[in-house]
Image (cartoon, rainbow, N blue to C red; front, side, top):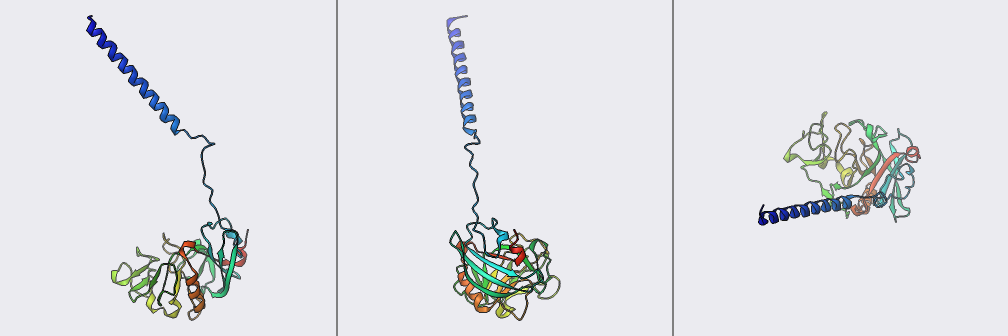
Amino acid sequence: MNTRVIVAILGLSCAMSMVCSSTVSAQTSRSSANMVTPSTAVVPVKAFAPAIPLAGHFTGHISATTTQVIVVSARTWHSTTAMVTIYNSDGHKWIRLLSTPARLGYGGLVPAHSRVQDTGTTPAGQFGITETFGLQVNPGTAMPYVPVTNDDWWVEDRTSEFYNQMHSASTGGFRVSQSGFNSSEHLATMGAQYDYVAVINFNRPNPVIGHGAGIFLHAYGQGLTAGCVSVAHSRMRSILRWLNPSRHPRIIIGPAAWLNAA
């Protein structure tokens, strides 16, 4: 074999050796970088709001980001009246701002998960409040507020993709009727009780069809509600002015003994 061939073979062998060595080194580096030992793994700890007066059952269930709470406390599961108390949190304790009488559904209270539509029951549990509306102009709330028009309905039609949402009759997609099995609420015809309304996020935004739709905190009507919570007109206006989305308000509803159960 001539000298030139020997030199070429030796050169190729050396180059291949260097590539292999480099590849192994890179793989070892990546493997080491991807290893996380238990001592360096960080598990985030969720912070909760301080214990809520009249609603100890929900301690450890309300995020620390919530600094406005409405507690609706009734005497029993069969009660159709209650007391509404609103609180602000300073991060360490809750400060009571006011208490006022309230009316509930004519069917009393039921746990939210077992509620059935058209039974006149008020769902018990804790729910967010993220939007408001009314027949009157915005009273000064910081919450998203929709002034109701004649085209606005609250959809309770079980066959509609807009179930448990505000939707306009002109765009369709639901049975536009206030009577019958799949009726809905024509908001503009509901009278002064809907002058000021806070939507209770029961069974939304991902509703279970048949659990119910249109559960609100609103002003007094003629009597008991069909499942909502109602308070005096002036109180409702004040509550809307107090609500603030940056404080992530929630409403807690139930009989007193259940709300305070450990």
